[in-house]
Image (cartoon, rainbow, N blue to C red; front, side, top):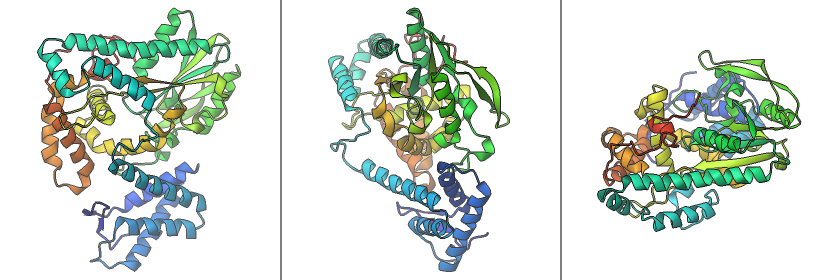
Length: 448
């Protein structure tokens, strides 16, 4: 159904083009969250929303986004989709709370932040004179970049070693280890390193590739750009994952599916898979801590690790460098090399990635058995050399564009940070097995 409405007012006050497909996508995401996969019905409901908008507003009117969302709720409830309406309302409420949290001063404690780990990393940063950009620059100026690399890598390796020790202590009952964390936190490298450390001690492992549990691409929800959303846990067949993990934990054989990314199709019952009595299952997944992922697995049978680059360094403005900014740059570099994905596209999509992880990943970090920090103080000088000019260009490009307000805010912030850091072009002192090599390239680890 065509809409008479051509523009809407965002919460920021900006006026942007009206897009009916975004309504259908938002409804379908709520449908998926309740276990449904009916895209056609989501489209029909979006048509109902547009019909009411056409009746309520004339062609010259510019409704507020809240008006549109109120009508979506009304349609869902009146058409008998109470569960979907509840999920839509819940998502809307959570988005509102996230905006409030982001607007508050950090003096208010955020329960999603692992404070004990943060204090430990801050103490380390202060003792190594790496707690401010100015201190970092001073050490680089006297030729200590390679020392900074060495100290940073040791901190990370100590975390991985401690995680291995904690796992060994629980081997009597343990059946699986889940390595989770938001995008570009270093899960893949950490999984490899953890396995290496435990294999040296005589333990055996099998890895489960959770990608094979994706639903067919056509059943995926889409983000607001119309791209398929692989970040949401509902893109995975959580029920089947949970069933298979439950069977594997009991020593039974399962037949895992196979997912073809080229065709976007999944084939069920392809590969027999069994966990022997002397083997541990290793799972590297964004959503390893998500409750529905392993809800039927007893606590004593699973060890949950959480990854985040918990860098503790203040910029020239007195504000701490944001962890999400480090991960954004990491993903830019990795995607440009390994996925032929333009860094600008990564920037434009990052607010959607961030929204999903704030809802589906980060709130569960407190349930982890151990947290590993993958943040490296020496990242910033390398990034300054690689991307400073890009962020300067993006800041100019997105300024004043209401549809790219988030991209402008992030590029502006990172431009300020990177131009204050002494750039370093030579990364030869970074170990070939470093977690950072997962993103800047040159790793000697096998990621296949």
